[in-house]
Length: 152
Image (tube, rainbow, N blue to C red; front, side, top):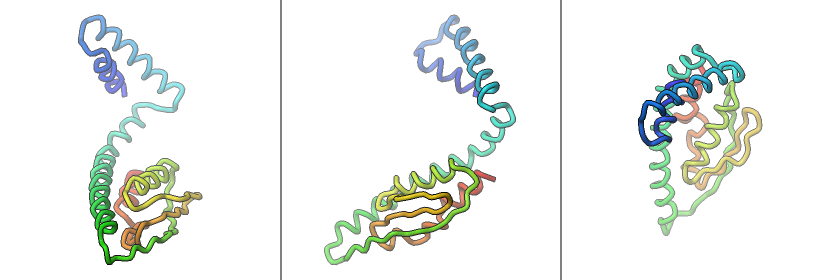
């Protein structure tokens, strides 16, 4: 995290001088000390996040891939003259340990065209799908599996 703070300092300053580097090192160290002391953060937690970063990158890859696929499917549904669109509400449960995973899943579903997360109540999700074909496999999607891996 110290390195991230320092890199952001350099990027936001737009140039590199001795004064900027020295002051950036001091500010980055102070911020890192603050989050370690008051926000229950530390080298162990940072290492755990680094180990999970591969899953997060994989999650982002699949999210972008699913958004692109859903865009084409939604366009196909809208442009098909003879096809009758059958909207459906899907209710399913996913047992996550953290609210962060619930938040990520709900927003990933909403970001994917043709689906909207209507409600989240604990482990229960209610999702509106533009068509029944978009609702298939939503409770056991790649998002759910990756979030379970991230939680450990």
